[in-house]
Length: 120
Image (cartoon, rainbow, N blue to C red; front, side, top):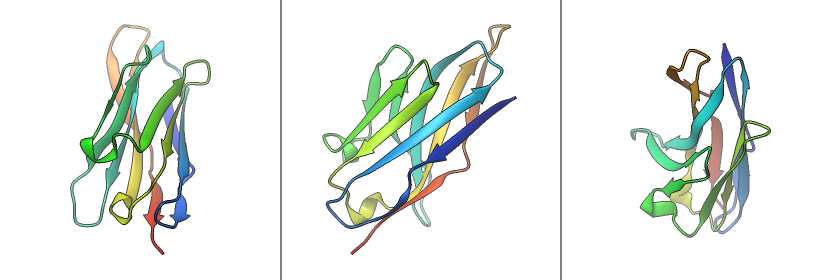
């Protein structure tokens, strides 16, 4: 069983910063990749940023230059540093982890989400 737990959400004013963390724990062989998704009210969940265990990253166009994703492989933890936040960044942020089992199969797990609200 694998658990994925996010933290770090909250209320911030436009132009402010927040740092999200997501830790994966449990029984697995290795982590393939981790990523952050967000879902705004009445909108579909969308990819914000992703990173592989090797450090390759990808970002949504809307957050490039403002958000930075990083991974600590020793801690099985991914971080999302969010700067210059805008009201349109508001939403529930979910962490997705893709792990490789001891038998070599890939599985994905989602966290419960953390609310980010950007408002004055």
